[in-house]
Amino acid sequence: MRFSANLGFLWTELTLPNAIRAAAAAGFDAVECHWPYDVPADDVAAALRETGLPMLGLNTTRGGPGENGLSALPGRRAEARAAIDQALAYAQATDAAAVHVMAGFAQGDAAHAAFVDALRYACDAAQGRVILIEPLNHYDAPGYFLRTTAQAEAIIAEVGAPNLKLMFDCYHVQLMEGDVTHRLVRLLPLIGHVQVASVPDRGAPDHGELNYPHVWEVLTRLDWDAPVGAEYKPGEDTDATLGWLRGAQAR
Ligand SMILES: O=C(O)C(=O)[C@@H](O)CO
Ligand SMILES: [Mg+2]
Image (cartoon, rainbow, N blue to C red; front, top):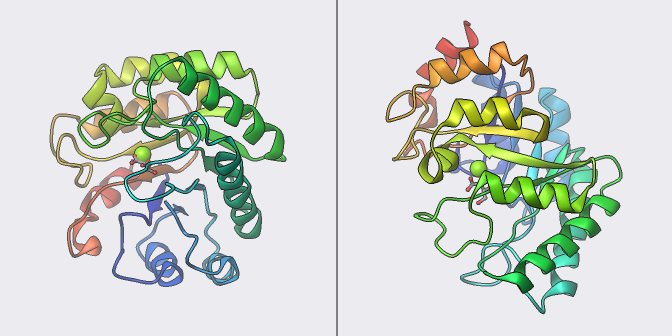
């Protein structure tokens, strides 16, 4: 098993370049982030070169206060496209493999149409990069447009672009739908990235209602060899939470 440190949550007390260095020192195989836009892409690219870690992905901007993405918001097409352009430019500068296009808080047919339109735009503009969509759970993100893997599956089919993939975050899937490993198996051809955290507290993947050693076993059986995103909230000392990583890497 290989793992990617999600620097939106891990080592947040460090600057992003130093968090990349900390992830390398801790033995991660890759990094990913949330919203890196305040940090010059050149500084991030330099830390990636220095450590040899690839950047797997980043998110489109959340938008204004209280927003969580723009792409499914009716009437916000120009801003949604600008957010996609911004993310793709940052991805290009840091050679990030994927961009997660965030839908936002919206419901209904107009939101669905806006999201499909934005995703078609993103997939066309991506120039070989993967575009990800991620269902978020309704405890952390009440009112978020994309809530289930079934909804994501239908949208991926409707958009019909080969570079549109599902971000399968086991934490969100367990909270919304359960049956995580059956879904991993069935959805495998659609999955572009896997993320993990304990459920329900979103801590390290070593406790709670999901048995991650079993998830590692299933992913190994599925020949999943891309780094799995460690997207959990470690509290104050990320390094003190990494016992699970040693165990999983030893598999
Ligand atoms: O919350 C998550 O899960 C994520 O992957 C974020 O990037 C989006 O909110
Ligand atoms: Mg996630």
